[in-house]
Every structure is written in structure tokens, then in C-alpha cells.
Amino acid sequence: MSSDLNRRDMLKAAAGAALLVPQRVLGANDRVRVAVVGLRGRGLDHIKKVKDTPGVELAAVVDIDENVIATRLGDIEKLGLGKPKTFVDIRKMLEDKSIDAITVATPNHWHSLMGIWACQAGKDAYVEKPLSHSWWEGKQLVAAANKYNRIVQHGTQSRSSLGAKEAIQKLRGGLVGDVYMSRGLCYKWRDTIGRKVRQAVPAGVDYNLWLGPAPDRGFTMNRFHYTWHWFWDTGNGDLGNQGIHEVDTARWGLGVTFPNKVSAMGGHVMFDDDQETPNVLNCFFEFDMADGKRKLMEFEVRHWMTNHEADIGQFGGASVLPAAGLTTNAKPAAPAAAAKQAANLGPASGKPGTIGNIFYGPGGYLAIQEYESYKYWLGEKQEPSPVSRGKENHFANFIDCVRSRKKEDLNAPVEEGHISCTLVHLANVSYRLGRTLNFDPKTEQVIGDDEANRMLRDADRGYRPDFTIPDKV
Image 1 (tube, rainbow, N blue to C red):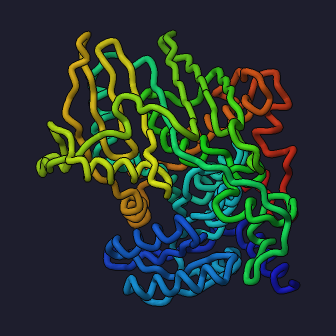
Image 2 (cartoon, rainbow, N blue to C red; image 1 turned 60 degrees about the horizontal axis):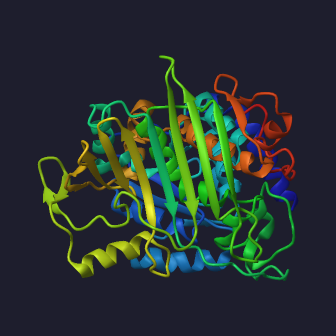
């Protein structure tokens, strides 16, 4: 334990002088050495992205579960990658000056702190969605990225989708007229998590490091693997889980930043289980524009049986348009292909989901289906277009910017991630307090509501010693 304390003290001391320590300058032929942090779920996808991106080396992996590390080392060997260094404690990994960048695929409550620590240690960071567990965390990560001149990409990969980017370009070009409202949809089958009793921490798990900033409520399996999403200490509900992708796209297409007013209502319906977060949530955001007009955003979370909207969840097969790098189709896909695609939109049960966005203007509306596909309907007769689709490579965009040091080329920079995540945090606070919030975009504070502002800082939950978000990064 004393060595851990000394290591933490050394890291804190080094952080203050990080600007003065020369970092490794990458040449055109140098490999970018990456550490993947958090290996159980999304972390495996990150490892595969490292493998598929030229000029990138998997230098290290970090996880608090020795069993998961062992499993992933087997996967890494099967992928044909060299054996990376392994760490249980991210702070020890951050001392390795040969590592250029990290990717963070841990539970939400760790995202911002790991990003801040990476910046202080002179490393770039790809931080999975949501960027933050609270508004305050995101604000401090933005400050750290700017202070230490680090490249920080938010894991909202729609921003790097050829399909989504072309859809937004069409909106900007006036396809449906002046877009006045966007609607985000997060309809995803989520079964009950049941009730789980407290138990001993499984062998090989460093639960102290898993908790990190979050309070210790006693170990249960429901507060561990994946279902941590549904507890306020560690997750942000489905609004901050799947929903942040669609919140970000809805704001992007609408062309807005912070809202002026937020209201959210819903509940944890149908199931009697341990879940704290709502599984049905209706959110409404108002944005006052510089020209005196107002734009509107709706967002809805549903967890069970539901309808599709604007054909989202039903977009069919496609043929390639090589010139544009996109795809289109004029007729529905074969039943087997359509069924396969629908299954991909839902959870492991295979039940279809409705994940996407709709944008409304006086000339029609446009729908974007999860990440890559879009379709639009124009005029009073609502004449439909074919479906267009284009792939994304968000991680490659991050690596390109790590090499060039051009933050302006990031598709999802930390500043944009912070704004979108603030919408999530405001809606969750509105729901939990049961009242509308009036927000000042300039100060990033709720007007006349100290209780709401405390919740935006996770002040009532608090942070455990050694895992606090610094007031000065």
C-alpha cells in the first residue's frame, strides 16, 4: 500500500510540471503506442480498432480484474497482436513515458478522471461516451485538455460516420428548410435486472480500484458488470448510455450548444428490481438563438415493447456508391437481411430497437438510423428518398490528430462531448428533482437552483479520497 501511495504522490507532483516535460514527438513513420483501459466489454472493440488502424501498437492493457486481463490476452494472441504490458492500476501505467495515448472504456464514473490524469501525464485520450458522469467532471476534462495541449476525442462515433455527416450536410443545405426541432429516440429492449444480495468481491477483482471515485455501497453483481449503468453512483441511465449518441446527433443536426430550459419526466416502470435510473424518460430542451428564434429538442427513452418511428429500425439493404463512399437502396432488403439488421439494433435478446434521430423543417423531415444510415421525406405528400449509408472510423480520426497535433481536425472534440453530456446531466437532474431547470449557457449554471447545481457536481454523492476531480487541473 505504501508503494501505491508513493506512486500517487509522484504522479500528482509530476502532473503540475507536465507542461515542462518534453513529450515524445511522433514522426511520420513512428508507431503510436496505445494503452486500452477497461477490457471487459467495449474495451475489446478498442483492441480491435488498434489492430485495424495502421501505424498503431497495442502497448498496454489495464483492468482491475485479473480474470478479464487473462481472457483478453488470449483474444489479443488470436488477433495476431504482440503481447502488451499489463496493469491493474491506471496510475502505474501512466508513469510509462513510452505510451503516447490511452483509450478509456471503463464504467462512466471513471471516464473524466482517467482523461484528466492522462492529460496531466502528457498523453492523449480517446474517452468513451459519456465523457463525464457529471457536468463538473466534463468541464474539468475540457480544462485539462486545453492546459496540457492534449488531443481528447469523445466516443460519439456518429461524428465520423460518412452517412451521418452527409445527412447533416443536407440539413445544413436546406433540404427540409430551416430545421426547428430534432427528436432523439432510444427505444431499446432492457429486461429486468432483478434483485441481487450483497456478496464477497470475486477473486481477482480489485474492487477499490473499480469503485474509484464512487462510494462503496457494498458489492452486489447488479452494481458490477454492465448493470452498473442503472445506478446513479456509477451510471447515467440509458439516456447517458445508448442515448448520448442520439443526444449528440440531435444537437449536431439542430446546430445548437447549451440549452436555456430543460424538463424531463418519466419513471422506473414495469419492473420491481434494483434499478435506480428511469427506464422510461421524456426530455424537452429549449434553445434561444441569437436571431431571436427558438429551437426545440425532444428526447425519449423507452425500454420495452414500442413502435418504430420514421422507419428507424427498419432501414433495409444497400448497394454501393463508390464515388461518394456511401451506399443507397431503392427497394427493401430481403427478409433475412432485414431481420439480421433489426436484431443488430437491439440487445443480445435479438429484439429490434429504434435508435436514431428525426429532424423537422417546413419542407419535410429527415431520419438518421443508428450511426450510419439516413432517409428523408419531402413535401406535403411526404415523398420518401432511398436509404443512404456510410461507414465510420472514429478511432482513425483520433490517431490522425494524435500525429498531426491538430485539435481542429477532431470529429468529436472534448468540448463538443462536454456540451452534449451536459444535456444528459441536466435532463437527469430535472427528472430527479421533479422540476424544470432554467440554464445559463454562459455560466453553465442552473439559474436560482442551488440544489440542481450541487447535483451537477456530484456533490451529494461525493468523491472518495485519492479519486477526486481536481478544482485546478
